[in-house]
Length: 248
Image (cartoon, rainbow, N blue to C red):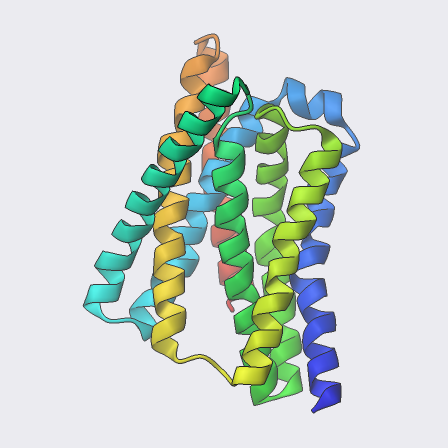
């Protein structure tokens, strides 16, 4: 049992924490990333939408019920609408200018990482080869999303150190999910489906309300609009490709 727990922790770190390497590469070129941050915003929005429609929804349809499929995403959207307005109120009264989407993205990512940890641990409880394969799939699923997120967080006003710190803390949530799953056995498919559906609503909200409208704050030239659209579609295409090659 100890060996299984050790494998779960090590491969959860590989699957969720190591995937931050893509975003870390962007931070090494901070000036370039900030200058082109609007395109990373488009990529991140596309990656989030791609994750919802090519990864989350098929999972929900497989394990969930009709009430889960339609109700939990709606709850995710409403919950993050309320959360973001509370954050805006707090920052307005505190005189801070950091974009609130920095926090909504980080919270949404944390819930996603929690699910990743649960999925990896549940796979290892079946057998080690399935756990390793699942960890590899999680790793490659996470990289494109993290690349987009790092660019967005820099655009939102966070320093390079803060971006790294918050993303590491967010990724470590996956370990908590994995360890809890190991000790309390694999969660029911219904619980996992509810978590995934709720996170789907969060991702739809962040992409549609926070990220895509950022293009309206840019100088509206045909070139910028076209490039933003291309990066949006690229984010969707990359997630689609990853889900086809490495389905979880």
